[in-house]
Amino acid sequence: MPTPKKNQLIGLDIGSHAIKLVEIEDTKKGRILKNFGIIGLPQDAIVEGAIKEMEIVSSAIKTLYKNLKLKNKSVVTSISGYSVIVKKISIQKRGEAELDASIQDEAEQYIPFDINDVNLDYEILSLPGEAEAEKKEEGDKGDKGLMEVMLVAAKKDIVEDYVSLLHLTGLTPAILDVDAFALQNAFELSAESISGCYALVNVGAEELGINAIKNGVSIFTRDSSYGGYQINEAIMSKFDVSYEEAEKIKLGGTKIEHKDKGTLEEVFSSVISGWVNEIKRALDFLATTYPDETIGKIVLSGGSCRIPGFQKYLELETEIPVVELNPFGNLQVNDKLFDPKYLTYMAPQAAIAVGLALRSIGDK
Image 1 (cartoon, helix red, strand yellow):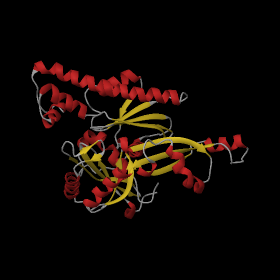
Image 2 (spheres, one colour):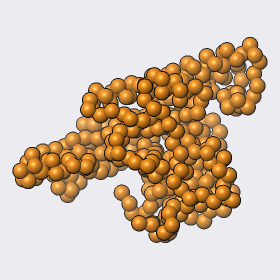
Image 3 (cartoon, one colour):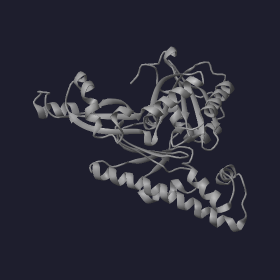
Image 4 (tube, helix red, strand yellow):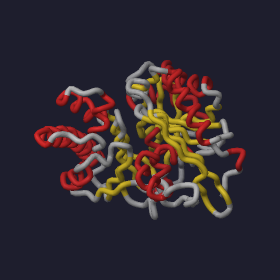
């Protein structure tokens, strides 16, 4: 069902390297890409998901809004990293009212923070066929057995910072999501089918996020402190240049002398190797935890996923097909408003913002 226009939200992905904004309009003819924009952030404005320079980030969002001539002030943004815990847990079956009353006690054993320092949310999961199978096993008594719940805990201080940022910018925070779920929304929009097992891997500037999903339900998530910034830091160290110059060298915008090419290749291969090993560790854990599940495909996104050699090496090491996520794939796009080549180029960076823009006021 198309979302009423009054419920539509602007997707705002506030990353440590750049802010991405997407507006999608739901119509009877389908979803239309209405706006897309990106603006860079200076180094250290946001570090590991924590906003260090509130005024600078707010100013960047205002500039983006002004450049795109946006009127809608209701936004959905997301958080990730060390301040967010996403965990699937199994607990004794109970009604929703009882679960509401007891979820905090249940969650306490799974969260490495003081329970009073986090905002807690949950969703009851029901994989296809499970409810029926459980009923047969329990003889329709319904009072035994386990239920699966997706638990999400976010540190209050980080949540408050993001809400304060949006208020400072003159925007209304309608929904605060989690990167992993936004990415999943973008994947489901672009995928022909969501049946089977997939690993969604998002490689950003400071974070590598992994979300394994089975038939549209997340079964495992992990965020690690890996990302494109590692290449910048290594280039800064090896070539004694500034962060900005290192970024240009990384992107191929600055030519380097022939004698330095080998050193640069070493930087890339060393960092890529670390990323691939981290992904393999996560997949190994997944294989141990869910021995009956096989990951059929790794779907990549994020601004750093196109680092030369990464995709081929990942496919070689995991022996799993690797594809790139194109979140614009199933959106209607007016070629007079958006350059198709530019959208293709920016697609991996836009994935979370597109996933956020698919949310609407009142959904879960």
